[in-house]
Length: 277
Image 1: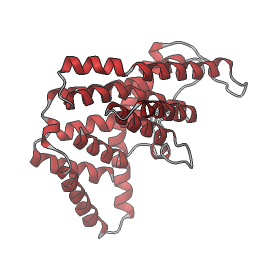
Image 2: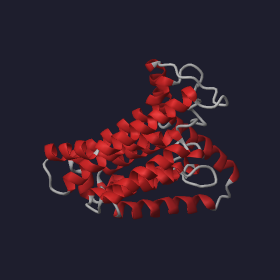
Image 3: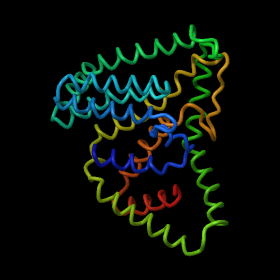
Image 4: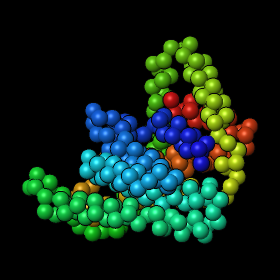
């Protein structure tokens, strides 16, 4: 899905969420997401038959990202979907592609379980400076999930209005036509990079949407173990959950844009880019 992946990545770069979303890619704060993305890239190279060294490198980079910042670990749920999409693009039948995905996710599952066990162990038996305790409460995870959905839907709309009011009061008049023209040019350029077939294949589109939903749920599920002490302040700072939910949101948004007709898509993308920037 090169076109849809490109569109989602482009939307992510300007997604008006908390600034820490960007910091996860920089060494000045934490390179957790940069390491995890490199791990996904290596995993794709392994799926393409480049050798087991790429599988090992991908899992090592995922582990490095998780040990840098534990909340990046849910990104690993994308690995089975990558295998499934690779199987479909290779001409496999859907059932064969699903079976391949299950086989390919064995080692990623082992790595995720080991890393999750490590983090749970640190929470339970780590240094005294770690004050949070584990307390199982699925209802709390659902509450956190609801706040995460709010942050990446109505929260984004709210931020667009807030930034829009600031821009009206602070930007010079000549910058508005420039911003509109820039958004239109970006939209036309992005549309040219988005193949039409990516939005017409139901197997790809359904699995893409499923991947975004699974990633969103996986990012908030660990909160079922943190109800004793740790209350996430998700709306506004979106504490500790900046990247995975935002990535899930732009995947769904990118799919929605891709499924629009070609003429409407250009104007919708231009309006979204203008609002986001």
